[in-house]
Image (tube, rainbow, N blue to C red; front, side):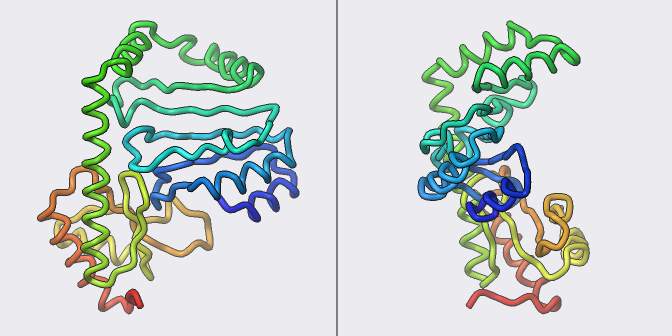
Length: 240
């Protein structure tokens, strides 16, 4: 999120802003403290905006949390949520939510139209896991492992002069001139990557998303080489 673009959207009448502070899908973007402060200053000028801060990766994002909410913006309506799915397991299907009283009440009201309530057994399990030092160690190790795998692929792509993004999270975003052909060529070589179209707005530059969560060192080396090779006939420009 850019401060100027957020300002323009709010001036046009937008009433809510959804921010992913780290591990953004698919680019891996993460806010630093300067960006968080800039966005907080914008939101301070529009105090009626509903801010939703979605920290979906939490402690395995591979970057420090920089929250707009800690940047000085005093909003009437806000919420900050952190899913436990990536850190503790998707089967828990829980998220931690904080917010102003009115927003929390509205969320609870909507819950009554669906699941109605969240299992106290699962809530107790999540609390117990997050309170366990051994679990905290395992989560930290998982976050470090994801970071190592992401950085390894970025380094291999850089070695082949292939431009790629991935400051945090579980994905690496690679700009390409055309998505379908690149995805198909990589599939023929045994790689399944995601085309970028479902993740981007119309008119944005194409790209492919590579998930690094299970990528081994050998696979990173081979994948980077194959990506470089399939980009050559496509006329993809290199770094520099």
